[in-house]
Image (cartoon, rainbow, N blue to C red; front, top):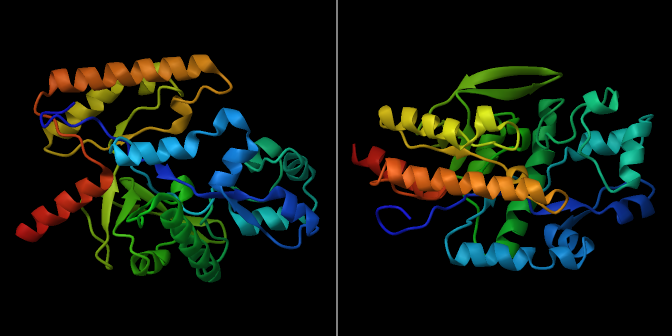
Length: 298
């Protein structure tokens, strides 16, 4: 707990849908269908039947307060085009209800599927805005509140969508110091971001400046390295915004991964409150609101 007696809190950037493989196949791959993530949980059977209830419990206890990552982690246009083209590896993946294979791994030149709002042409923004609106509506239906913070899958998006996101109630966006922007036709450019920077629509960027990705490498991204990242942020009077992913904690396939992940998390949090006893924990939305309040006061 922090100096106010509050527990540490995750702001999971959450997806609310997945492809409905059965319906897509029944329609001979001519139309795309999706299912709410709650239906996906059911399809995984009794070992996952408490996930949705645990999400809601986490929200109620302010331990796990999701924000939006979009509708699904899938570039629908690219995937459907590949399923209707000559891409045998992609089609084999479909037979196993799977889409997340990169074009490098598949050795197929068809673009990344996981970059859901990446574009091949700026004309796609209108259709992507519709997908995002459906995702935000479903998020509210499932979790009971409207998302205010959006992180584009694979952090790739054309800035033309920011106006649409603003109209949909998104006040906060992710940014890296050199945030890549999709321009279409395989072209990208980097945009400089920092914590608290605003765009022309008044949306605030929240930049991750600490990494805790021990599942990738304990040496490079474990709790000890994360503490050093936090120390640098605090030295420059910045909030520490920690990047960490679900893969670091899951154990359904490999229980050892979950055990190690929770041990690392335990060591990180204990060392944070020991090293900085005046630390305060908050959600990303609360951080954004604090930044906005301070800036308005200035």
